[in-house]
Amino acid sequence: MNEENQAVTSSNERRTGLSLGKRIGIFALIFVIGFLLGLGPMWLNAHRTAKKLETTEAELRRSEMRSAVSAAALDARRGDYEPARKAMSDFFTALSAELDRGDNSALDQTQQNAVRPLLTQRDELITLLARNDPVAADRLSNLDAAYRKATGNAQLQNSPQ
Image (cartoon, rainbow, N blue to C red):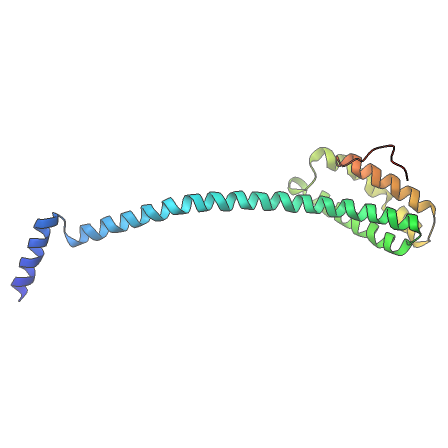
């Protein structure tokens, strides 16, 4: 029976010209090449998606900061000082965190340099809002305009208030 297996094996080798080990090696090589050909486009797609996500997250952080300072200015104009104080606290916390991110910041270097001086007003503005001081509304409107100008989100300069 052993002789029959050898005869069958040698007749198969003669037909294909390759031993079983070589055939398995070729199939493995074809499998690896196919895997790599499939992996390349998927990796590129994942890389593009990750870049889009990073860009979207940065835009979201900028938008949240812009929204917080605008909401605070609006609340202060209406006389709702506590929500304005909370929004300003959130704004300054987010701005400080964004500046601490360095190169990974949603703000480029020019924008970072332009908004850094806004942090010096933090304590004074929060105190004005905590005291329900009407002066805070004008200060917040000015801060909102300064932030929008610094980050390239300036609205019309002569818009009615």
